[in-house]
Image (cartoon, rainbow, N blue to C red):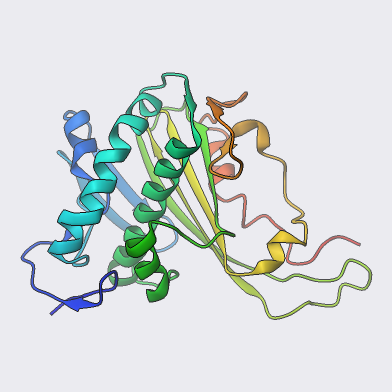
Length: 253
């Protein structure tokens, strides 16, 4: 029987849970959903919804805290998806960030079985999400606006980071596995960047500056305005998806 990593129960269920919720399909009934995992070449297509599922969570989690999170997220996400300018309060930012982290966790569980590739998020993170609706404080979630021709994009990226002293380029430890997931639905763009290390709070990353293309969610007790100053079109979205892979393993001399 499947094991639910969120509540640690074994359970039975006839069908898997959808990674991309069905309320999105109901909002856009005429859209053809198309997913290609470019890292693994895994393809899924659907007329009514994108049929990517995972046999977890259990029905109790699915109909409980996950269902409540979806209900809270819908009125916050829909205006952004349709391109309506909004000002997000801190509680609304937390709702969007938590919803997307849950989506990233579900996609991770799906890809581990179907792609396949190793899981990134660990069981203690699944349990933390269920118990507290929170995530690793060093994970970052960014919200942008997409103006390209594709209706739906979901792409993950994997890489490794090596942190080093700038003075002599001596590594500060072993490499850190980095994971990012980017989701675009109509005008909504969400991206999560994950690295399980506290060094991110003290060591700068030598990366391109994309700050004009996003607002970062739930970092300060302030409202944020969406959309950001610049939009992501089809010529930029691929660079944005893979921007964390472009970070050098070591800083320049």
